[in-house]
Amino acid sequence: MANEAQPALSYWLLDEFLVAQEWNSLLQFTFDRAASFAQTGVLSANGASAIDPTYRKSRVLFELEGFGPLFVDRIMRFLPQVLRRINYPWFPVRHVELQLTESNTGDFFRVHSDNHSNAVRSRAVTFVYYYHREPKPFQGGELNLWATRYEGDTPIAEGEPRVIPPAQNQMIFFPSEYLHEVRPVHSASGQFADSRFTVNGWLHR
Image (tube, rainbow, N blue to C red; front, side, top):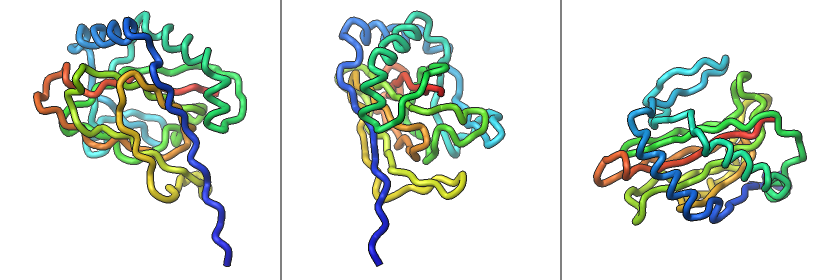
């Protein structure tokens, strides 16, 4: 019997998403607000958020101030190219959801998709922007990304994951229905400034 075709894995890595002055300012903004980060929650199927350190460990900041409009404007400029590169049909973006996430030693996020809950079903495209101090002060924190098929509402990972290390000033875009995980982070110092930082979010249809 012939092998069934495997779903393709479509994503786009965009280098140098911000100019040097912008990402340096973002890094300083992050340092200045270290005390404002809160533990990251996990969404249940009904949309409720709860802290579950066995499934996800990191800290999050939702108020990006002037960096919010900067990211939205930059992403929307790239939107036609993003959708073409990830083989995603055109859609009008109703809302751009943004957050800033900090991950340090022992932090991770187990395998999940980003639009499994009814509360976030409108998430269509996921994006993750990476930045950190130089030289890179942590290890790990890779993004594992799977081609994904669905049986009803159940996502099924296909084959081996594509492993994407967090690279300075790089943005990745991929469909929000893809299964993915963040591998554990290790920082030798354990200091906030030596964390893995991301601006991550979603384009809602």
